[in-house]
Length: 114
Image (tube, rainbow, N blue to C red):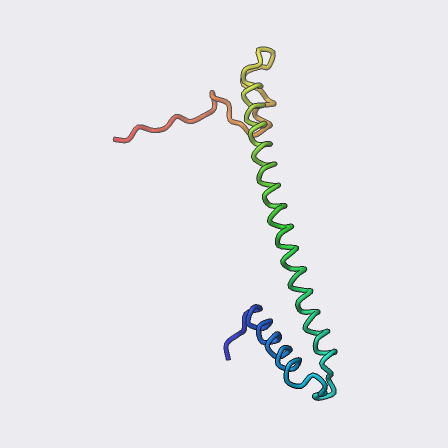
């Protein structure tokens, strides 16, 4: 038998619970009452709700991270231009290099293709 997806598992559990509720609500099977089975199925549903909530929080956190990174990198770029344009800063600036930029004087020129 193939592996069941979580959606298939909950579908089967709900179907079993519904059948028990509608056809034999007062019976006990294998020492398990309808109430006990309902509690176990509810625990499954609660876990899935918690997973959905966590996924939503994760998606929101990832979006917040991406927006923050974009703003920070844009500010870093602006800072690099500010260092280059500062007349009091020596050229090439050690601060500019320490931030991870390559000074214009140290950049390789692209080779011409033949």
